[in-house]
Length: 385
Ligand SMILES: Cc1cc2nc3c(=O)[nH]c(=O)nc-3n(C[C@H](O)[C@H](O)[C@H](O)COP(=O)(O)O)c2cc1C
Ligand SMILES: *[C@@H]1O[C@H](CO)[C@@H](O)[C@H](O)[C@H]1NC(C)=O
Ligand SMILES: *[C@@H]1O[C@H](CO)[C@@H](O)[C@H](O)[C@H]1NC(C)=O
Ligand SMILES: *[C@@H]1O[C@H](CO)[C@@H](O)[C@H](O)[C@H]1NC(C)=O
Ligand SMILES: *[C@@H]1O[C@H](CO)[C@@H](O)[C@H](O)[C@H]1NC(C)=O
Ligand SMILES: *[C@@H]1O[C@H](CO)[C@@H](O)[C@H](O)[C@H]1NC(C)=O
Ligand SMILES: *[C@@H]1O[C@H](CO)[C@@H](O)[C@H](O)[C@H]1NC(C)=O
Ligand SMILES: CC(=O)N[C@H]1CO[C@H](CO)[C@@H](O)[C@@H]1O
Image (tube, rainbow, N blue to C red; front, side, top):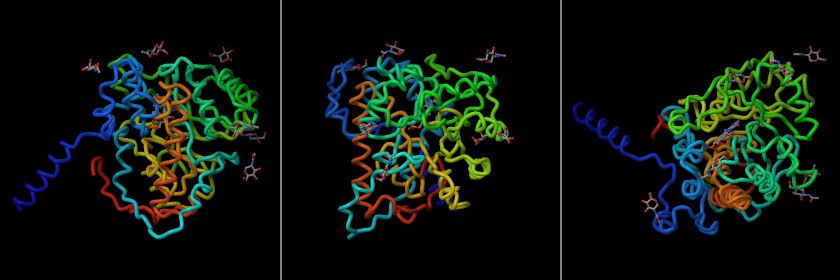
């Protein structure tokens, strides 16, 4: 008896001692540590997405960096978003012909063609990293042929963002937060539709202000301090105000996913807002797993997107394995913008390459055929595993 208690106590000490790996140690400090503090290391030296954290901390003011980096309260959701992926081990198959994997990277999102199943998630205040702010994201997305979703709280105006499109065929979506003023909403929807955005992404996970301790310390909290009125009745009313699809972003339970379908949503977007809104909400991988276990057909009825903590190709593959159609990345794109458009493009190139080589090593011949059998979903449901 005594022994097993002791063993348990030791295990919990070991867990408590393990540091949280926001930036895993892959030698960046050893190789680039002598770079002058206010200088960016050359983009060629950036080998993975978390390296952009390291670069951005040198270039941005502590306040600006903290606005991007922060999570809500004790940041358990933020950490879990990143760490959840290592709790589920892959199940690679060997001796599979994977030589045609490249041709399976492109996908469609709401019927539009893109070169890869990931996109730039809507993020506010692009100007904190670069004077050209979101313009770099639009251009980078065009160059890499992926989807960009613009935030309502962007540094640049909706008009400026739309005007930066590469050509008339570049597809952009617009994220919105709503006020209680219906005529204001009506005007906003009309503007978005008139400009030519292809869908409205309605953030539903921020009914109230986010509880952001780290951000508050630096005086860079959320801009929005009011409560929002959001119900499914209202969602139907909103759908009547526009011909564009309205995609709820931030649903976090299978119950809400079912309700979304009953209310004719064309797509749903699983997200806990990058752990920035309500601490201890689940990661989108856990929500996708809940849906897969309780209602796998749901993935066939609507397109499901997911974001939060995706930093590697293998992370994306785990979500794709659960029939998620495309995954979003927030912070990596925001932080890479310290290098401007080139940084945004580098994130796209790194992700494309990692998705392809990881899928190939996993023995996936065609990304469209990846399924839950490629992952061991037995996991201990705890914050640190
Ligand atoms: C700096 C920053 C600003 C954000 N602004 C918004 C926003 O205006 N609207 C929104 O719906 N989500 C916003 N998000 C959440 C992102 O859309 C996305 O859900 C999240 O960043 C994904 O997690 P990741 O950063 O770990 O990739 C923001 C996230 C960050 C990091
Ligand atoms: C950068 O700044 C930190 C903290 O001020 C300091 O410890 C470090 O030596 C500096 N590095 C260089 C290369 O100047
Ligand atoms: C999307 O790609 C498909 C297949 O490659 C093609 O037939 C279709 O015309 C493309 N659609 C658009 C809008 O470009
Ligand atoms: C922080 O962001 C503000 C607002 O965009 C900008 O004026 C300022 O130059 C930024 N600071 C740094 C150090 O980049
Ligand atoms: C328009 O831009 C898209 C990127 O969004 C690119 O894939 C496409 O080739 C461009 N089309 C033309 C005709 O230049
Ligand atoms: C609601 O928005 C409309 C259009 O922007 C504005 O004219 C009106 O004054 C607003 N009403 C209130 C109560 O704020
Ligand atoms: C939406 O519009 C249709 C047709 O105009 C109408 O029948 C329906 O009641 C409206 N629904 C809501 C929720 O406003
Ligand atoms: C958990 C969660 O965010 N649920 C939301 C799903 O979307 C509906 C419609 O906007 C909201 O009412 C729920 O609160």
